[in-house]
Image (cartoon, rainbow, N blue to C red; front, side, top):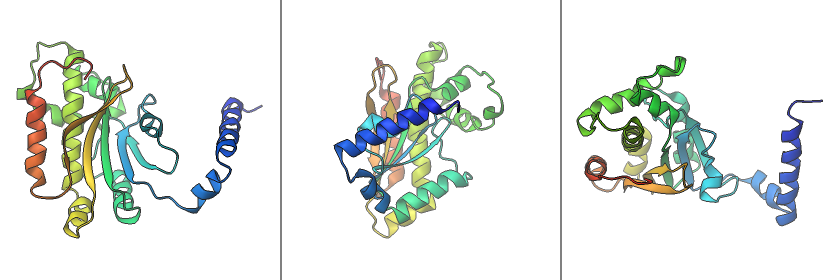
Length: 222
């Protein structure tokens, strides 16, 4: 008996339900992948991309890592981004963080979590860049929420800085970059800052997003 038998049973039940609802679902899905959205999110098991936004398999192209980072030396993330933009022609790139992110909270609390500390240095760099925006007397949970938000906005900026997005906009491709944050406590997805579509100076819109976050005071539930 396989220790994953329960998962196989769930899978069969799910597949049967899909076919019952739509007999051509899998045949249609196998023929073509044509998502409009790329989701760059956290690996956290509580944040399932398709389910949160109510979309079916095939409708969201997904890349996930700890703390939803876009790092310019990360060929994994850049390869996903390039394939999504240049091959799949997605119309929206969504950087999605979430409140209660363990990686971000570890940075706030200066708590070591092992090898991943090296990866989280990128989040620490965001915190250092915006250190003047933090009141260090605040509760660590509150500081964590603020860093989650700033991290999303900075990763949106990193997406826009890639040659992939700059080249897409230069050739007139319609693709927008959005910052979003998900609330584990209520299941709601919220926009952060201004969406960027390549028209005008994206740097100005990015800075406006940072300033907007800085001016927000009391975050109750996000």
